[in-house]
Amino acid sequence: MLTEKTRHLSASELIDVVLDEGSFTRWDGPVTEPDPDPAYLADLERARSKSGVDESVITGEGLIRGRRVAVIVSEFAFLAGSIGQAAADRIVDAVERATRERLPLLAGPASGGTRMQEGTMAFLAMVRITAAVRAHRQAALPYLVYLRHPTTGGVMASWGSLGHVTVAEPGALLGFLGPRVYEALYGEPFPEGVQVAENLFDKGLVDAVVPPDQLPQIVDRALSMLVQEPAAPVPAPATLEVRPSTVPAWTSVEISRNPRRPDLRQLLTHGASDVLPLNGTGQGENDPRLLLAIARFGSQSCIVLGHNRPKRPRDAAMGPASLREARRGMRLAEELGLPLLTVIDTAGAALSKEAEEGGLAGEIARSLHDLIGLRSPTVSVLLGQGAGGAALALLPADRTIAAQHAWLSPLPPEGASAIVHRTVDMAPEMSASQGVHVASLYANGLVDHIVDERPDAAQEGRAFCGRMALAVEYELSALAGLSVDELLVRRVDKFRQVGAGASRRA
Image 1 (cartoon, helix red, strand yellow):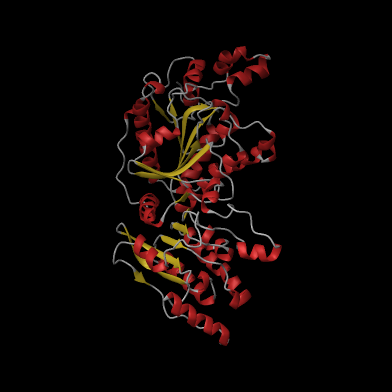
Image 2 (cartoon, one colour):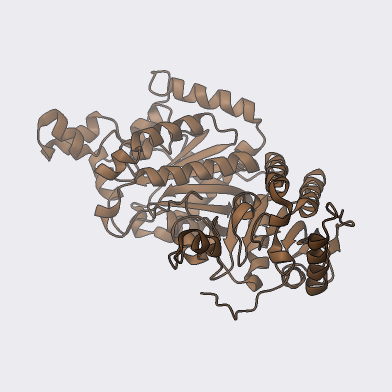
């Protein structure tokens, strides 16, 4: 944790660390002085003398690993990095210029918030800044945030909390309420360990905690996937010719439950060329049962979200926080114009008091609502088990790939058997009659692409993940040339027709 004696980088030092040497060009013009209050003017002069800068933010552009990026960095030595009208003007001008010039934007706030000497008008400036950031994001341009020590108040509650990807300085004090204010108001210290970067990571409020010298690598990796370059079409993989397995549905169910079966983490490890994990909902929830990341499969970048199979099967149930995190990924894909990849591998949703009170049913509904109308290309992968609403919530997509022994069912077959036959012993028969296996899903038009298992993915994990990754890359590439409006029409039509009878036969 940071201490009072810890030295923090100034704005200029952070720029030197993050940007390629000699690449920074400053955008700032002369500041406009506020109303001539002598005491405040004296404060400003002392701040300029102490900090060596003319205001609490520096803006400009430079290169990060050769990539052109706009930057806004707070200078905490200037009146605790506080934001008055002149600083707000500078931030808004920089954000709007970055938007006009189609530049990704990196913000590095370190601020006590609104400048008290300027009162309500400075406070209202946070609305102007937020509006500029919103327009930047709506232009499908990446907005990355590095939260530095300390970032509090109106800055944390506006442009500090709007990043597509947000990372934080180790041990940084981050929060809405400054601890000195809390102690003055309530006569006791604010609880320790709450407003600390590492705790915010645990709570799903920031994506990573990294020191400044690692920031260039994080930004470069993120932008290499978020800023898409035109890519050549991907050749058709051999898996396009794979057809469903002829084994009974129950055999596939049993195969899918092998604990050695490759999961989403292994698919990303062995199949993706780069992965940048994201963390949590950004709203104080972090469910380990869902994995969210930016990833690249071959030449194709995407947002990935999917079930994170735990080591202990009894911990597999997905709760409402997982779906709120998933919906964050959906929003990112839509806003950044990236395709979305969902990966389904779950024994079912959580069946608990907490899940009910957390609104699990509503989150499933909202996930389905968002996916069926998502204004981005979508690919779903049935990787293993696909039980109940937890599976359905991530299913709707333009194209669906299935591992040969994956399955999809309203309940695990044992649960269906218990309802129909009052015993779990009829699970094999129920799995056959319900058509849970890939043969039925393919025949009824849900599955478009099958990845073979030779004969079981658990026996050839790395090779299987390689084949699945090629299938994912191909499907993402095939969707890239289609308009979003066309995709939306096709997506809705696909789910109108699934199971309607006019479909292929296994």
